[in-house]
Image (cartoon, rainbow, N blue to C red; front, top):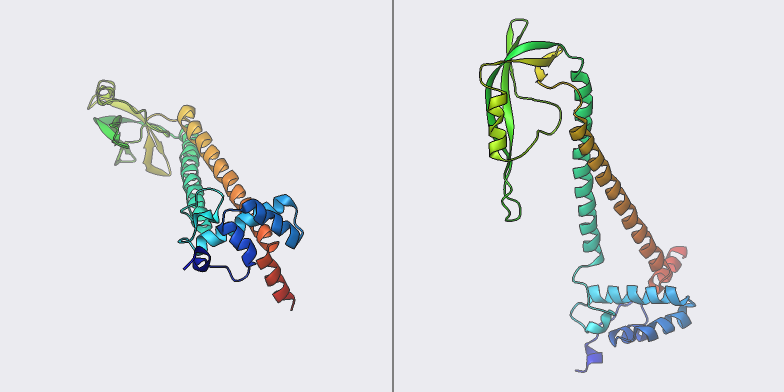
Length: 257
């Protein structure tokens, strides 16, 4: 059986164009499309590439001449799924950062107006925040200060130092906070009068932390929006190119009937 006999063809496209694409003669296929369809050279070249992609996806076991370069192992649908997955990841990460930054600003502003009461340090200990990433040892720690205070005869326990990301560093730097907050010493505690379970040691907005989260989050959300717009634009261009293709003409004629 010859190579020509082994070829498979798309039923809605001329075989002479598909033969040229099988043989890797993409320039000749472009010229033939210009003659048959009356397309401009750029439109014809895009149409030839679209046909080659369709053939490559439909008949992956056929000749490598189906595309001008190496054939992609991913279909258009798979590429779109991967692209949207990255958009979703960026958007989710950005929204999370915006949430933490916005919460830090809102709660920090509210805490500056809260009443305060004298509390007692119960414990100060280093807490591991994160560890190995991609085979790289990157364990960091922050100091967790646990304190106790009384409001209207009821005792409450808290461990929120401020509304903002805690400063992270080595174990020794986190452990040295014990000297700043020795067990049993008194400390000023700011609490929410509507819910004393919500308390903090350092009231007010920590701009260096909260604003940083907010800016990073907005950048990520903005990038996700730009990429999403680009994906939609590419999909629209491909759809318009498909409508100008022979297959598109057949479907259009069928719908008019």
